Image (cartoon, rainbow, N blue to C red; front, top):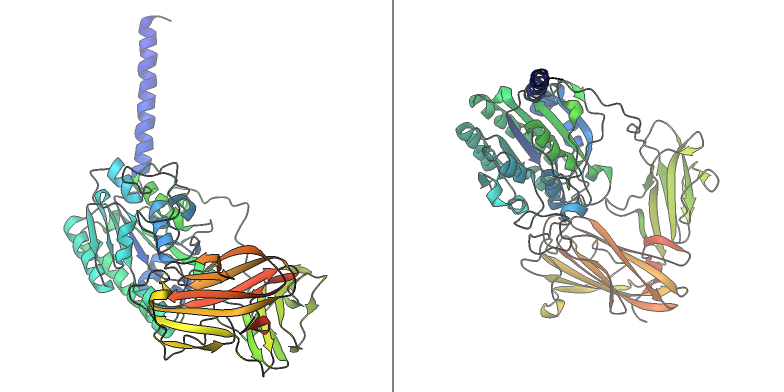
Amino acid sequence: MCIQNLSRVLIMTMGVLLLWSCSSNNNENDRGIQYVIVIGIDGLSPNGIQKANTPMLDSMVQNGAATMHARSVLPSSSSSNWASMIMGADTEQHGVTSNGWEKFDHELPPVVATANGTFPTIFTLFHDQQPEAHAGAIYDWDGFGRLFEKENVDFDIDGDHEDQTTQEAVNYIKQHTPNFTFVHLDHVDHAGHALGHGSPAYYKSVEKADSLIAQIVEATKDAGIFEKTMFIVSADHGGIGFGHGGESLAEMEIPFILYGAGIKKGYHIEETVYQYDNAPTVAYAMGLQTPQAWIGRPVKGAFVGNEKPKLTYKRKEQITQPKILPDAGYFEPAGGIFKADSVAVVIQNPNNQGKIRYTVGGDMPTMENSQAYQDTFYLKNTEIVKAGIFQEGHLVSTVAEANFRLVPATKQDPVKYEVFYGEGMDKLPDFTTLQPIRTGYVPEFSHREALADDVQQDQVALVLESYLELPEGGTYGFFTNSDDGSKLYVDGKLVVDNDGDHGVLERSGSLHLEKGKHLIRVEFFNGGGGFHLDAKYQGPNIPKQIIPANLLYRNK
């Protein structure tokens, strides 16, 4: 080929490549997204949106893309989930494993780190890849501000109250039209902790959040950027009772709503969405390259011009587990402790389908080992009851569990307790420096009777001690399930370390023990908000269960 013809071919090829490049860039820009606003509502559950009067959120769902089945990360606590939301990764990558995390005081280091030592956030991506972009955060909870590097943002505003936070966001959007704004509102979580998730006051707090979101949307219209703005509304976690931090769907499921520029209208997101998909979705909308260390994926199916993904495996219809009565509370098995010779067991099916089958003794129910539930039955000993919903010979629900602890009416309460008050507690105090304000005996290792209504509920600590009789030697596992921190000792040896400021979280440990009585000591504190404590064990031929009161004694 002559030089002249070769030159002509090269020019034509370069022209085609140039046209392809321009076409590719134009396709990315055709979505018309120049601004992104993420609004995170602490403690907002799908149930809150569905049952409260939320015209703004309803409009976003109807005119945008949404799912009410997005998932938080474990633990379902605030710090871990806000970190995952802005870091595109889970706790095992970024290391924010509890509310006690601090930049230079934590257990698990991040898998990768910026020059400042923290895992890269969505703010880092804007700072490094689009330094001309204006990006930052306005937040109601000051704890959010410790999760990102200040040098990565153009504005860092602690609003200190939902109304003030919203007003700060409105003013900033109108004055500066930032390219990326993260707004955090905290009051819904406060209502959940103080008055209970699902309470009328909780729904009122959701309605207020809806009105605050409407103000932020209106600010983009006043600033003339609404048509070019994409909104994301989500939450860090849901809740149950007066708290969160556990593994129930009520705590783990969160809403995820996309609305505005570049988003399909009325699109039902069927693909799975996780907490750590939030930041990658922002990055995708704004043309940012995500780090290899991020595990999140953008929710591409919600964007105009993208095909709906073909899903081989789809979300299974949820069949609600049976309800075993009496119900003990939100964070421990049903059943309870009974000073009686027998106790009645009632099991309800909350579904309009399926049949209840159950076991007594701790085995998981199957068609072969379970009984069909017909009517109320009675227990005369400490037992574990497990039940599930069966259809066509198969278990189709999760399994409900109840721990029934029966003790003679004449048996003395075997667990000695001491209550202490403190200040500024974010971990268990040094009990040798404190004087108990109350002492006494209770039936088992629990907060229920020791921290009665007339005892201070915040900045309070509790020590419980009793002797547990083991029927045989072997390896025994012990567990504490607490909000906030707890520790469990056996014969003076620390076995379970569940300390720190966190939501309801279970941790465990094990050791070999001989047959006979062993001193169990449980330490617990609550810094503030909702609280919970229970202790379990398991051993040779003993399934995991609440440490039974009938095997506890005051003396060895």
